[in-house]
Length: 449
Image (cartoon, rainbow, N blue to C red):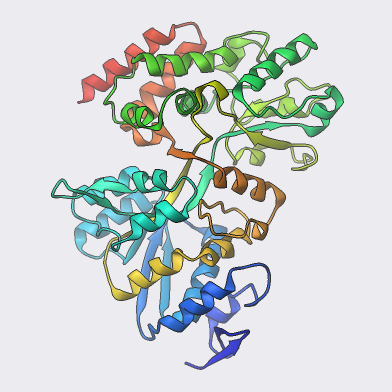
């Protein structure tokens, strides 16, 4: 296969084939970490080898990750075959049991990876990967914890490398409305509560909150409780809660529910009053931010929510966000709640390990960052490469995190995290006490053990 060199970086000649067409960014340009890529290209020759990968990315997301993989192909001479599937969770289990698993699987949730590791379907990460993640990811120890599972022998090991992060710890607002009222962005939970009261004193409604989501009604409140757990308790307590090592009705959990209640159970604080919280669809709930005059001033929701903003809303001008702040008095750093996808080894090979080395490079992340729709915890990336100001600001929040924790309800047994927890939160905002709701969820958990 013919190779040429541009700015010292190995790239394929224009006649090399389809991979060249996928190389969107010219080596040596654009703020990427090309030096690391050049050194990587000089160290590996995998001509004739193939890396098979499967994951949840389809459509436009598949096109974007294919761009990333094309640079691995150019650097090494290997072929990467990535297949995306909407039924990835079922497909990977079937292929692993049949002995036909790809080299790498991209898991959208750690829980499934942990299950497969315990059954012997995953191979631990190469030696030293855990130390590297701890040193090179923001809140690195958190990412090591999230990818460390028990193997079939009961021994713990690192079974994943996170690549692509979702961010939940955001409060959305209208800069126009804030400017008109002279409101400043709160930097602590104490200031956020003061602003909440100030908006009421000024005759406005601070929050729009909606828990409606069809059969999944209640899930937005679980995010609130998870955020409050991270702001009122040490990360270890959050982990104990996820694993039910402390009961759901432990005072720490009840306290976090009541912290959510401070915002949601005050009729003056929420659009439509407390009774509207349970019935308002979460997709419609932020619309009040953009009414004239505003029907609410703030909305806590994850990075995906702009997809449900009115079409005429321009991000950055009509809508913006800030970090859902920590409680200064508790001195627990800057915790961040979110999710993410992780690469795990399902069929080891030399080329597979080299791919993991590639994914450690800043440029492997920057190549998707520049295409939009990608956040990373890699501390070595150039934040200026992010495609939009909004993505860059989210990336900065992740970069400044001292603790990162995965959405707790996604890690709990489905009957709890996608069942009793959801319905319990609806019961809470419609009148049940936090103690009774938490006790009911724990009773359900006890029943399935």
